[in-house]
Image 1: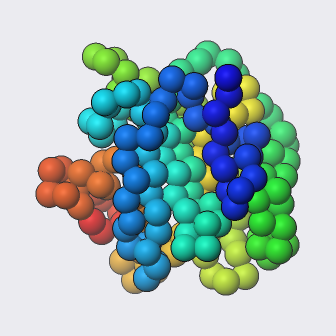
Image 2: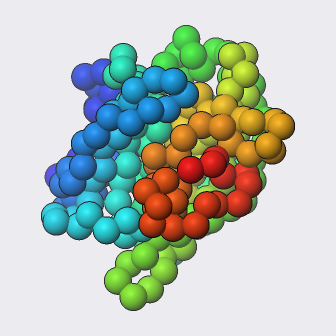
Length: 193
């Protein structure tokens, strides 16, 4: 049975949690001067960072701020750029139509994301569809193999003076390790831990 992320009481069919994953953490953390709820799903009893997981971040009003699915390991091709843009726009409209009306498309980058799966590193190819918002933030959806949503983030702030992200990265395990003093400070453009 498919498990879906629920946003303000509504299951979102584009945002999946693997059926064998369970909630392994549920904490409140600071993000852009707001306390946000960071929920992590993984295999039962798997709390090690950088292993297959899904992280979901909610605002105090239960809006979805971030979704990261680092559990996809498939050779299915990514969709076309045009299809990825359509997936991203439709998802933002579905999640928050009023917010989505103030997004301006910027670009699509071909990138990849990684996680450890046992002794190997799994690589997820993505099309990173980026938008600016009239509130001055950056927002994106990363579309991966088979058109699956790998990441979504909204309200990400940029520190132009430091040329790096200003928003905390509770959805990025290497940043969390650095924040906890268990790994090195990440280079720009990542946020200071």
